[in-house]
Length: 131
Image (cartoon, rainbow, N blue to C red; front, side, top):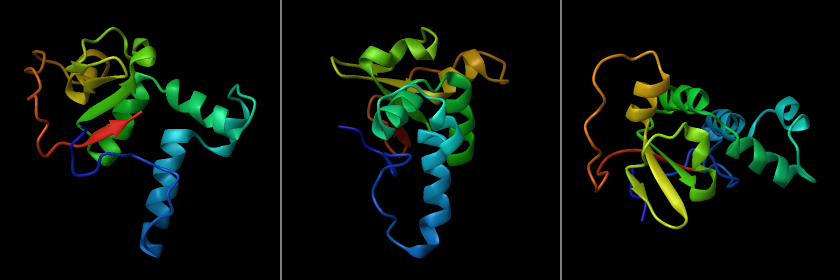
């Protein structure tokens, strides 16, 4: 199971309160694209276009999202893990692969220095993004 304080960046669920609308809209745009971005994304319908936009998000975009929403992990479908530049997953099974944002940052971001230590297996208290 994926354990975290908030395990999903954005979903199609309706926000719980009026105060959450602006944040929900921002999260949805980051994860699934703006109307202009979606218009240029391949797919037979809006659902396919949003899925394709989401699955084509690259490491630089994940890092920007991680900075904005304090994410520690990105969870991707195993058949789409090539999008993350060959970084070793800290967990993988037949359906998902889990990547540490710290490793993405070390490979693709402006942070320099030694590679981060291996991830704790439990992920206690960390935030994950399900992709």
